[in-house]
Length: 367
Image (cartoon, rainbow, N blue to C red):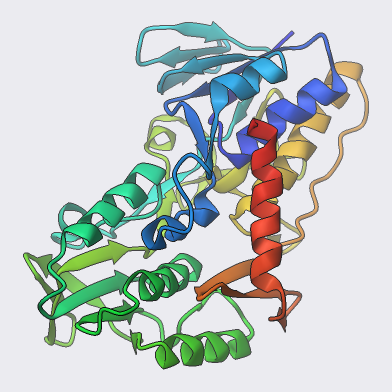
């Protein structure tokens, strides 16, 4: 019996790990176009130099060997659901009995002219490293403008880490630009946005809310209201979109994301599961967040349900903890400070230490 896991981010790794805990006999095949898991939540700290690429990534080959799974470093180009085969860019055709789609999401630029071509991102580890190199190439003997587009969780964290990187360089200015009326618009409690706005503003970040980017050209951003902003570097953090592979797959979707049933099976299919950022999960009016915590929890439930199906047992419903209505998150602010947001309550003391503890504990599995 073979389970094939497509995508080795947090969700995919959790599926493979949990399957092996529950069964020594299963053949587990993990496929990813990358060779290392990337601890995406720590990517902003690449900019400030607080972490290295090696510290926040893990060797997938080594991990697969530890759990006695097969790892294939390749990109998936198609899936034949009738033949139960996955096709890779290198021409491999891999049969499965159960399939788990965990291919994640990609940065979106919303079709804004020039945005993709002229911006850096921290959505991937490679992107974060390239953004850091671009920062290092700037001439700080003159006035420098850095624009961070998107003031969700990642944008806020990037702004905080940039302040740390630029410490002592009075000539540099950071602009945090957000379409919505306030930063952190996904968090229903406005108190967290108020607190973070003051924290970043006190550190010299200029926050521009209710501001729509219309076009990006060389060294100039044009806004919808006609105003312009000179920049030396843009770091784009405004939103994600489904992985490009999903566009090819004729599967039930909502806004491009894969629709799954309460047991994390792709709607209408019995042997195909999906977890992580690639999933649109909504049950009884409650929608799951797309974040690390939920990707891991979904991975564990999907693995358990695969084992239950093999044994002919009743499946387990997935119950999200972090929801759109009640999100949960660590939010780093730079200066070794952070806030924890759980159940609408903000926790400040020791939040940064707690976040780093979670990071270090997770990365140990790749040691």
